[in-house]
Amino acid sequence: MQISITLLVGGSCRENAIHAKTGISDYIECEADGTPRPMISWYRNGKPILENTYETSKGEYFFTGTTKSRLYFDCPQAEESGFYTCVANNSKREVNRTFEFIVEEENEIASEESLSLCELKSHGISWFKSTRDVYDVSDDDKLVRIKNSDEYKIEDKGDLIIKNLNSSESLHYYCKVSNQYGKDSQMTYFTLLD
Image (cartoon, rainbow, N blue to C red; front, side, top):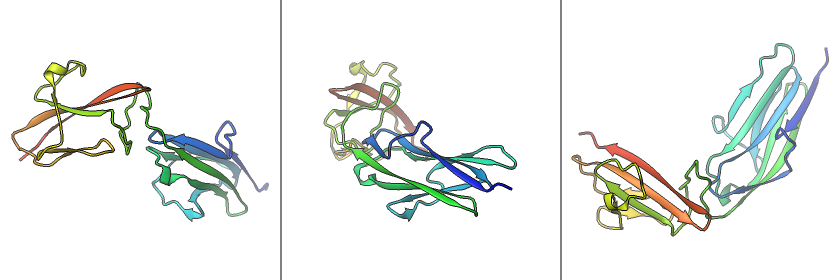
């Protein structure tokens, strides 16, 4: 019986240092091949990362197993920068690879397909409300701009805090974001149930 373990990192051999943008999703990927089937675990600055903080998919091999694991950063912040280690072991052998994950702060909108408001400090965030659905968010005459008041607070990072909920309200809330890189908008709706 051959005992082996091979660690492939990042699919297309990503560099040891991975540069991510603040608020834009990214991941580190490890794939391990071996007999017996290896397990992958993750560490940040030498400390284990708890289960369920990453997604794992396993191959369907019977004798030789392939394990692939991605450590996701949904909305990375500068404090998440550090050294991340992928450890693959199969009870016979252990191999590892360490990456430096560097989150570079940049206040920009991710893309036209997605809007990330997580922890971004931006002066280009505006909140609006409407009692009916508005399909074209550029149609400002149907929207009421929300400003800081006894009822609402807009935090520096863009979060909208609704202070006094009224059970009779069913409102659509719109967030519009713009900066030198582009613009985007997102709508959310809720009804407060008694």
